[in-house]
Length: 308
Image 1 (cartoon, one colour):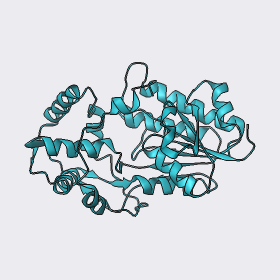
Image 2 (cartoon, rainbow, N blue to C red):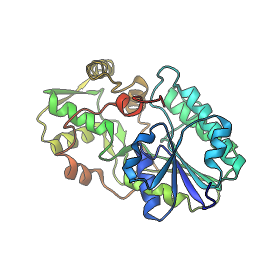
Image 3 (cartoon, rainbow, N blue to C red):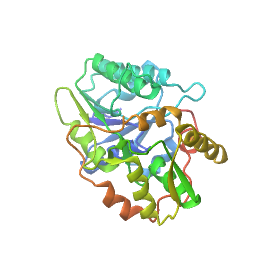
């Protein structure tokens, strides 16, 4: 095994992980990833070495031995079979403990705005529990809490655009007036890489310069995609049922009740100063022509191979 220091990114071939890995490579860092999808290594032309994301303690210690910084993006969107929020919390704890055991210098962890171990919503509660496990592991750390991360690979925005292109009417859960605070994936990658150079512990809401109502965000996507769909308010249960039906058609999970509750309760927003600089309004105008041309499946992206 090489003695040259390197950084480890969990899920570097996924969404947020690829932006972190890309930024680190641009800064001439050596990058290793822990992944369930080593077949995607061509994404970086072999510049990122892949190890299995195996949460067995000895395997984790072996994969992390010699690492300088661990960048953790691992999480799950919903419970599916043996892949559960509770299990993901335990696995992240094992990852952090293994990093401490082998002497990793620092951990940078991607969480979510308003993560809370006492939350009634399992997604946000689990995220809060992972943050608590990180604080307890004894290593210096940075927690970055994005709300909505936008970029060309984002499933949510793409599938909103897909609905706007396909359907004559698109329903918003409730009023649609609840706030949402998007940050560009490239900005998040930069913030994460910067955090790897820090010392001590910090917890940062990683959000962009603009806050929108959800209705405004959807209407901007519609305009950028050239959609003439009518956007209306519907009861949340009806919006969730419609998403469930579309998910069945596409053999996917389009939106969960947990995600809808977090959205409509205003949990995807921060009152902290913005850390990202890319404006969603500029980005969506530049990328609207390609958004939603086809449906993108969460299950195909993350569960086609080994779960997780």
